[in-house]
Structures are given as C-alpha cells and as structure tokens.
Length: 186
Image (cartoon, rainbow, N blue to C red; front, side):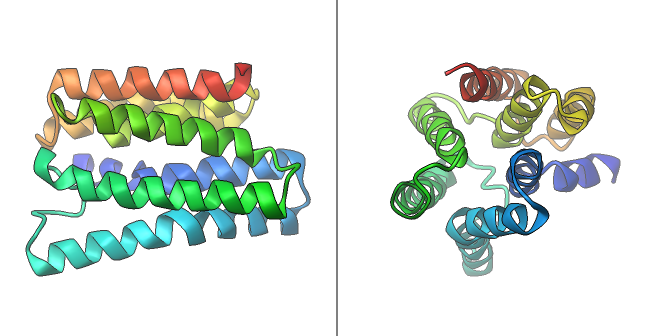
C-alpha cells in the first residue's frame, strides 16, 4: 500500500509538474508560472494520460505504468512527440523561455531511455524523479533537496511493486541525474 502511494506521488506526471512549477516560480510571477505549467501539461501530460487510459481500457497494457517492455515504444512515441511539439511552441512563441533547455534535455533523456528499451526497461519513475530532484537541487531549491531525500523511498517502491529490477532503477537514476545536471550546467 505504501509502495503504491509512493509510486503515485512520485509519478513522472507529478515530477514534470513539480519541476515546471518550481522552476517557473523562481523566475516568473505566479500567473506566468501557472501558465508555464499549463503549457507543459497541455503538450505532455494530457496526451500521455489519454494514451495510458486508452491502452489500459483496451487491454493493450496491464497497467498505466506501461510495465512491460513491449508496451514502451508507443509511450515513448507519444511523450517524444509531445516534447517536440512543446519545443516548437517554445521556440516560436516564447523564444526567451528558460523552459527550452529543460525540454531539450528531457527529450534527450527520453531518447536515451527509448534506445535502452531494446535491452532494458529503464525506470521512468526514477529517471523523472531524479531529473527533477537534481535540476531543482542545483537551483538551490528546497523542493529539489526534499526530492533528493525522497529518492530512496521511490526506489524501494518500484522494487517492492516488482515493476523494475535493481538495474532498471539504477539506470533510471543515472540517466535522470545526468539530465538534471545537464539542465543546470549546459
């Protein structure tokens, strides 16, 4: 029960929203930050939620986490397309947006996970949580520090639910940490 709740609380959707909200709030007014989160949700979270719901209802996926490696290609296609569309929007409508760097890095992270799927099912929960924790901690955000402290609990949750192996959560953590550092340092 605790493992499932941790998996929900630290779901990639939530981590994307937390990262967008926290980073936006540090640089923009509250209204602009809310708009940034809404834009991210429109291009990425909503299409993924529709896909997940549809795939589970059709019986194509066992659960909303796309826990089988064979379920991942369509997930990566939709999330990658959403990120590309978001990037195009940001480059055309908001050229000065700090979000461009985050979207490019997240797209690279998703591409790495996509390629790795041929051999291993990378934990996207760990990748996105570590991405958010690292990027926000490097911004010196208290939210980032709290997320760093929560990562071991999420790791335990993914293993306890038997959604991933130790190698899969480790790889997700490494890829997410590298992406979070890239957002800050590149």
